[in-house]
Length: 283
Image (cartoon, rainbow, N blue to C red; front, side):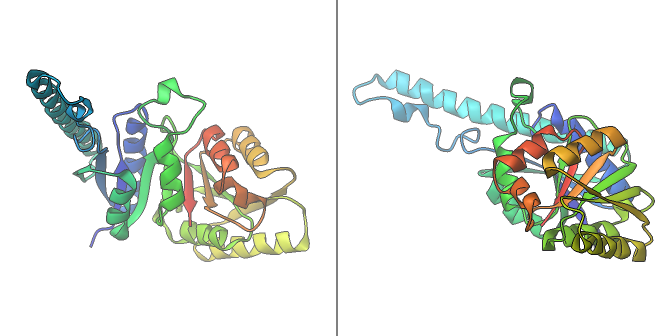
């Protein structure tokens, strides 16, 4: 059975990037793409009955008009959702990538939880529909997805560019080791330039951990460079990505060192917010 990746599209400026990255991933890994758009409960009409806000004694004509507006808004949201999915599917199929569509009503997190079981990966844009109005902030949905997704989560940057150089942030934690193992096993990273970096003190333990990670990749035919950088992870990694021209960052979603804070609070969102390349988080 062909493995699939789930790509979340919402019609924002990031949706095209999500589609472009999905096409790249599907092309390298021979995956099918399932495009998913989730209509929130308000968009779907549930929980947004304007007529319910009218006090007793209001004219029935007004109540009827508000009910019609509720119905029209729900229909428009449904039509828009279908159009978003159709446009995304056309983008992928123009590149020869097979894609299916899934329009869902309800909560985004519930939808992901139900659909991710047989998926290889989930793709989401860094920001949502308000991207152009909130460039200093991440989408609230992204923060929720980061915290609950059990499958590898690919966070697309604003614009796609071919991925040739990959940076793995490594701290020796269980999720970091799983991230290295994922890169070793996945066809996505075959033939790409890979570097493994630890941020912190240059100790024997840190070097031993990097050697183990490099050996794991070498066994899969990936020869990786390693390095230990001083400083704080969010600053050191961001600077390295910019100066060395990395196209993609891979890291565990939690750790046992300073890296752990990247995904447990404001520092995690800061890293994702400032990093200009797509990030893969592996639990």
